[in-house]
Image (cartoon, rainbow, N blue to C red; front, side, top):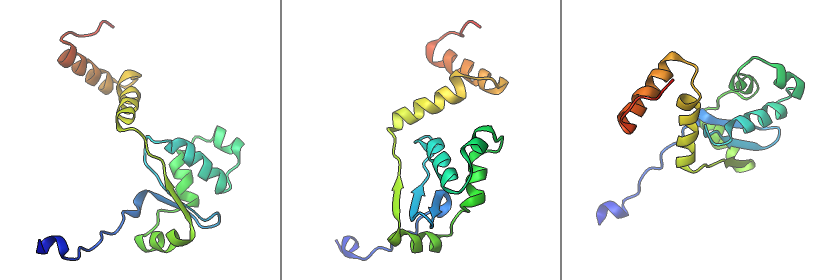
Length: 131
């Protein structure tokens, strides 16, 4: 009972995946596989990249994003939150898992992932797929 009533320190947030756009008063917590590509695109537009540039660029969207919105420190995040609209996009965990499976195993081009997919099928279906 004493433990339940004792004050517990609140852990600091992990600021690593947050994006702070002070100009637009937005704070986004990036959750990969939950509309992250769409929101990276949106934040890259807010950061000043032209749509045409984003369409033809060979740079990774997160590299572009971090060039305009560097990873914040915990203190920067905590200072930004009260004056900003903060949000994250959530996704059903099973849909997220299925999407990751399809990206990495179902539509494979890598020799490693082809071997992994074959091993999974043999293990759980009992026979190797026909190529």
